[in-house]
Length: 106
Image (spheres, helix red, strand yellow):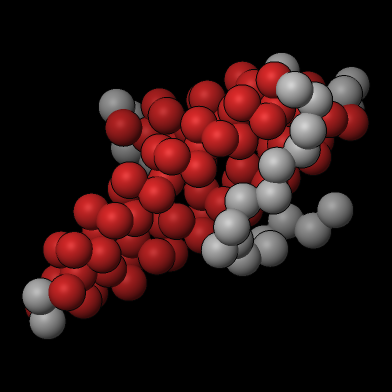
């Protein structure tokens, strides 16, 4: 289920706000039953909310021109780090995403 939390965030590439809603739904359903899912869910949601904040900043910086590059780098970074987190979760390790603002505290 920890892997499902991380992989559910890829729904954001198909559904608006799916990168937050997908992990949120899985996390809310299983956080009481499985402590590992609670940890993975918090880490994933903190990262996805942070990425959304960074994307908004990048969109503002598009007026300067640098935002286009930052948004592309952010999208690639999001995909790579999410795949790493899913692989770590399959090994039973709760992955701490880099560059994450802690919105949901344990």
